[in-house]
Image 1 (cartoon, rainbow, N blue to C red):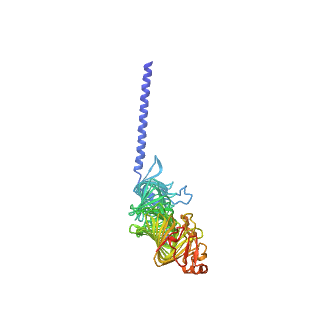
Image 2: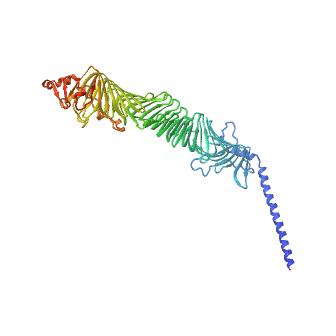
Image 3: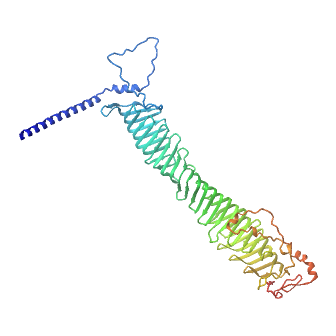
Length: 629
């Protein structure tokens, strides 16, 4: 019984093998039949398809004869294969037409509605022609897939190439892959993956691409290009390369026709290691190399000059820049900075200009110098800078302050020239004249020359002032303090001797000479040396009042003196300086003649001073500064 079961199993297995073998053979024969049918399909089918898509000319009436076309009842009309109205075409999308193909077939197994095209395939969609080696044409979907030597021709200026194309005719979207190239006149876009929206005439890539025109090469991870407007937008690792410079940005707009790059994000421009530009907003013309930089942009030159401003216009070819509003021009080599709401700088001539709240700051020394004027000019003399200020000049430094109508300072010889009613303050001394020349050493003023209407004034207290005047005054300054004063020509002095013990004023000394030398110590008059042909009078402190206490050209402008750096911007009305002094020493003598006639020898605390004589040191018991002849 067991053996019978085994025989039964073997017989059943043989039966299954035979049945399976028969089914396999039958399936192979069916596949062969379908394949043979597809291969032997008549070429007339292709011809009918192409003819059915061609426009049909309307029949013309003939006057000679009228013929009727009679179709055989046994031979029905061929079914037209031309594209029919697409059910998806709800927004008026135009149809894609097949114009040429060497072979046309259908895949009855996979998708019988797909037309398989091979050899010189050409489609037409509106004004565009699509070429390829082979394609799948989805007629009802109004779309196609193209393979091999894909080419899109739109008009006579736009050409797009690639290895693969997926085209949707309803939305006019062409998706090209592998070795993609778009040519639009003199602009070429290359990438590995490109989507081209024909409806919006916009192409974009997102896996890296490059655009090349006549002047520049631009690369980025993401890009967008419009062939009609020549506008391109780049994002993520944007790099623009020109023969003269390179530009790096995170986002950049560029026009391939005007060659203007619009800066819309952090951007860096480098000129052959010479000039660096940093900007977040603005535009740059890569053809003319002119730029308008906004939003606190920065231009850095290799010579150490740096310009920062709310708005900067920069011309690289002409090598000059203009800054507008809150502009800062810094020289890191000379350690100086120029401020203004308008600043101009020429990189070739090394000339600079600042106006509108102009300020020059010299920070080369621990005592910083601040100079303000209506207009400030800077220039380069060899390797040294020259600064010129015009109109309403005011400057401040810890050891010296001043004001004038115009100023010139040369770093080469450390000389500062002041013009137009200049006034210079050092410690408690005020120096004035028609022209002042200040010489510095180790960034400190050590010599001041005053010409024409020269005058030096030192405040003793709130009422009295030591004064010297003459044609020329030479003041020697040491460590910010006045040490010696030389008065040359028509020298006149008024000074108030003080008691060495309690510093009380002992009188008023007026002298007149051709030359006077005054020595100072601890901010006080130590002694006065005069020529032999001199005259002087010592008056009691209470004898002279009003204008008799002052020399002819005396004025005191301490209220206009800059006491801190911000004071250089203070504005004072332009008016003639009020000079309250008497015309000469003799006028002072005349004004006191009445009291002198009453007592020829006037008694003072210091001793006896003869009328019209010069006091001698031995006659002054209070040890007032002696006058040497």
